[in-house]
Image (cartoon, rainbow, N blue to C red; front, side, top):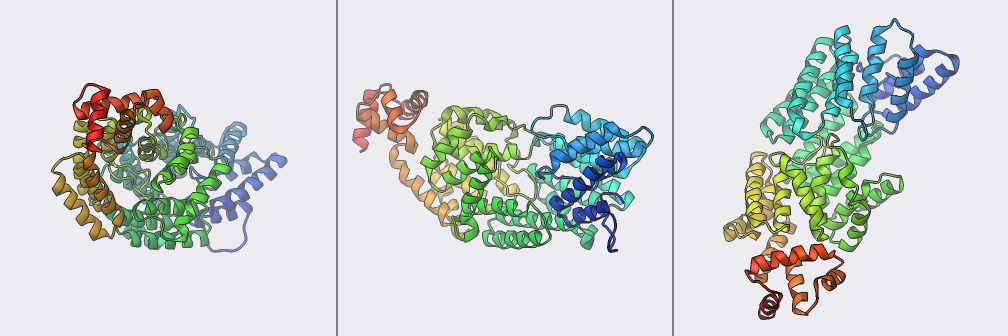
Length: 516
């Protein structure tokens, strides 16, 4: 039976048949445990064909802990399988490509393309879908999102021709990922509707769960925070009951984003930070970055600084084809700015500039960070380039409007007001959005920014540095006081001098005393 087929209802059957049933239900961990146990027994018996078929009972997702073992099993079976069964060999080659380590592989696109060419030569639908999925992962850099649409088209056509509902669902989800990254809201919603209308009750539980998360992500993106919360909790509960292993993880991701907008309002929100600490204890190193982001948004900057010091020099090691890359880069922006890490801010600014026209999202069933241009505006502002900051903020406002995202429109208005662009009008727009969405945190931020105008255009950190200059401290002493590098203090001082249009520290000190 093909891995994409829905199993029949008959009881009993082989261990591999049982594993396929579990995979279709959306219980990958149990499915692969059953399959790998069958493979171990087959290895002892010298039954290479059963080993090969055990490696093909499903398609392990990139977050599945069994993925490395499935990859190793597929490689072993391919190496040991006697010549003759070209289709089985093609399926194994596609599985090897699809389960490669996405963090370290370098020849993934070519490996996936070779597997796809062989699968298409043989005309085997299973091998073709596996290879298409491998190619999609290999071309995961959001700058290649147009390729995701083409790959999705091929998967949909394959599914229609073979009657494979999984291929159709996966292909349409690939297209939805691309449409969201590209900011094409109408195409995204059309694709969603087409998938639901086309497959209906033929959807596997895992696909149903993902579609519910797409609905939740859209609600969150639109500012319907309570609707998003209800959808996430309902989807997580149903998926966990169906054995979808990653449901709780993604539920925590959503609650972390909800807390960004609404603050901590329920037990699920409160559980996010302990959950992330548990991931760190379990060996997920980059979860330090996630924890730093959560602590920053909670205003716990000292704790965030400890996490940032651990992960700062490693976070850019993530390859750009993994879905986490763009999300992580956007997420680091408030952290590095809050920590006064302007060296990192300049680096991540350069990294993000090529993505300026895109949305900061990994997959359509995950929360969106909104326009990348929003983060570029914050970085440019922190780096003292207010002209670029204004341009990026204007772009962010246009992008948020095109995606129908009221929250990110509010944030763009707040940024433009802070930058002095028609400040009163943008401040009024931001406050109106805050009232409309029941989002007091935005209104509070706008009020705080309005109050900061008394700082003469200096950021809070720059004003703090100016105050220490007025006390007579040197750059090194200021750095020691604020836990900043001397180079970072020099950058702040350069911005202070430029913004105040003065030439000396004496003039800065006199300005500060007058202002105080």
